[in-house]
Image (cartoon, rainbow, N blue to C red; front, side):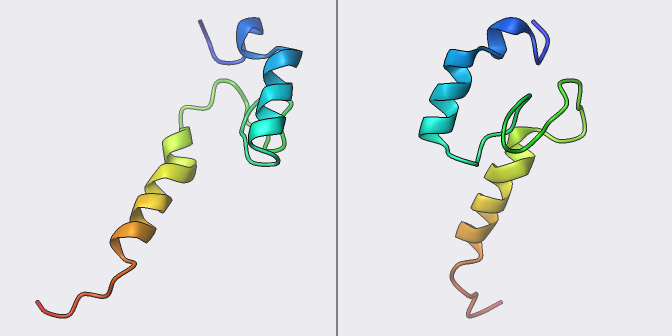
Amino acid sequence: MQGGAPPHFSCFMTDVLNERFPDAWIGRGGPIPWPPPSPDLSPLDFFLWGYFKNLVYAEKIRNI
């Protein structure tokens, strides 16, 4: 199935996403618009790698 296909975009699913992740989910009709055929960025690029970077650089390096 392709992104944006009807099973991936139902009123039930958008209600669940709005309840669980208010103003923080990406998708068609969501608070953060995302066109279905977008090969440039993935959800990992949007959130996960920045989160990991914050974890890694949270403590300053004290030596070489």
